[in-house]
Image (cartoon, rainbow, N blue to C red; front, side, top):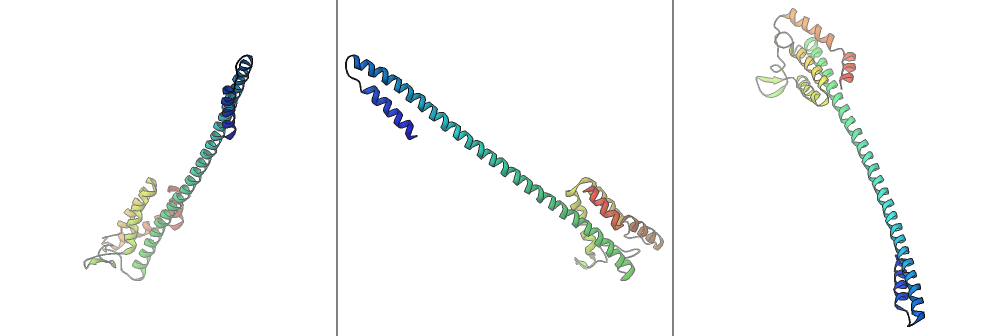
Length: 199
């Protein structure tokens, strides 16, 4: 920047400092050449400054692209973590419901033929409408499966139908048949593999 100013002042000084006669023409000739050189030098300095700024802009753009890539990678990690958390929550609800059925049918007799999940449960504000917490959690897992994938939601819909199919079955033999089918379809290893495949 200083060099450009010095060259411009020198060119003006040389142009203005001339004397009469032959010497004036010589000085004018030199002044014109010096002014031309100064203008070329100013142009070269401007061009150099422009290139320097261009390199700086390119460097900043590369930094922005790198930051964008890092942010996108972080968001992808977060998205995968949220996805994994949802899938784990769905699987926990399935396992808890199956464990609830085993306990409530075979150990404490709180569920069985002719019974309903929303009549004889342990959770609720109305005295004639109490729902079992594991069934409520299963319903929430079913709704959550729609946020993971459509195939998983379809799988969860089938599991909900099997769970609902055990309600209000008055015939004990029919209830036992449905319960056996339920346990075949709710094998923990098969469910885990299927959920991983569908999510």
